[in-house]
Amino acid sequence: MKIIVEGKTDRGIIRENNEDNFCILEKQPLYMVADGMGGHASGEIASKIAIDIIRDYFNNPDASRQLQIGEYREDYSETTNRLGSAIRLANQAIYEAAHTNPLWQGMGTTIVAALLNGKRLSIAHVGDSRIYLIRLGDIEQLTDDHSLVSEQVKREMITKEQARESKMKNVLTRALGVAPDVKVDLDELSLMQGDALLLCSDGLTTMLPDEDILSVVTSTMDPAIACEQLISLANENGGEDNITVITAYIKKESWFSSLFNVKKWFRR
Ligand code: CA
Image (cartoon, rainbow, N blue to C red; front, top):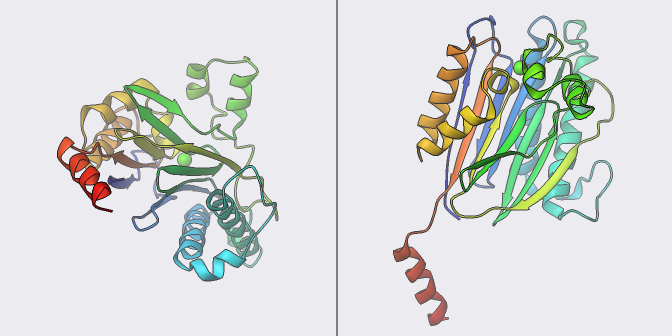
């Protein structure tokens, strides 16, 4: 499967620093976004530790293959379980770091990660950063926010629009680094040619409704342009928070390369 991917982060208009971090590992491929929180700019430290630990875990497959942290879920593939382990390892590292430096006390971060193994996509998240699947002109949020307003929407106490306006929208019900253990939400699905994936921090989704995200992603096949446009729209709408976006397009194979693959198959 041929994928073109790009990521971009922006401080936004209001905040003085950027506590988001992201990473694209093209080899695996693995995409991640982390949105840090905490006083004294420690949010930046927390999101960076999360990204670094998970990246190292997958860059060192021999060591990490032995390392199962937390429960092994038989209903998920080994790849998905490894992603869960890497995130739990990041949780421990942030939790421990927060206890070594008083300025880092209480720091934490969200994490959202997408790991591909052939056509199979493993996703994992903690917090309110999101993954969207854009398929056949539709947009679907693949992750459930671990936030107070998301709970309120689920219980039909408020609407999705009210959630985006709520003063409580930043209150998370789950984050990495705040406790020695964390529950990681995992999921798996198969990707198809022509799909697009979008990972983002809440600085995008609190400023832009899903329909606007969909129209930007479907208006181009260039991930750099999509990221650029999404960030400018979020800033035009107020840019109240740091904005991070990764966009990945699963390229459609042309009839020519399909034919080439058939030929290869016949030759075997
Ligand atoms: Ca944020």
